[in-house]
Length: 451
Image (tube, rainbow, N blue to C red):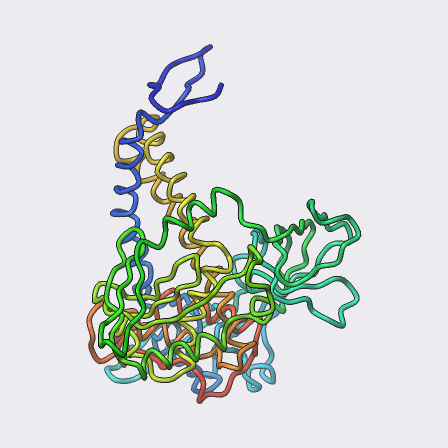
């Protein structure tokens, strides 16, 4: 039975037929979803609370020696009696001496813990289990940003992964069967992630990257107002993005030129090669903005990418600035504005329906959690893609986790004591699998003293 707005909950042939009560109720649910889920996501961004004494779970965020390392910025020191367990076997003494851990590994540390102020937490009678990523089966949609040459099977890079396409890849009209993959195509795929981080797809469909009519309408509404800084008239620029981002674009030409230079270098080659009238072309522009309430990048579907002044001041080098700008570029390339907004609308519907069926706040919270997962998935996608953009442009991907750690606190403070947020930890895991297994110590993420 097709449901329409305005209909109440009814029983038809013994089955429960549900609908949103009204447009006003739908909007209320969206607002409620944002109010409740946004703080939930912000809380998830902060480092996880350390586990109970005798156990640590998390990502390896720094390595001092084979037996001294950090787990989510918490110092850990093993002993000679420590047992290291890999995927298939217990590591030998030679394997341990060679270095059992890599930056970004996910580990579980158990044992008797001795805590000394100012010293790493020593674990005795310890077992360290080195785990693979919890996410092995993957399905998603993303734009192809590179065709990988020299492979025996058709292989592309998309979604921040290297993806081996199946022999029976489907090409959707107007593409024809027998076509070959190309940068800029839209890929919908599913498959399994392998040990090296690549994905072996068991199904895939490629289509032309043409925005739908609904996307075009959405894009037109997203950018509410924009004026560039006018240095001759000494008039600051102004920007307003739906729903709540707004601020001035300061008359700091050096800072504005810097972010534009870094951003231009990050835009992928296939995008730069598109004709101006190509519907997939995005005209990227990068600006510093004054908005004290903003603690991340902000961007619009038309390619406008913004970084708040107070966040720019925290970043220590161009590589870290590139990490933040690349996230905004990835968000535009992957159409995450549209996908996320559709997800929020869907989640809002789930909130209302769940509250109606399950009853009260219990059902409503269930719907909100589902919506939060959509937003988290989008953020992880832009994070993976940002690493690809950084690598292609010659920036150090190891600076991306550090950039997000520096930007995590709401208020300016000494960031040396800021814990590793989950966003940084996720990127460390991706870097460990897909980029380099043993990065130089000088490039490791700064450890936070969470003691």
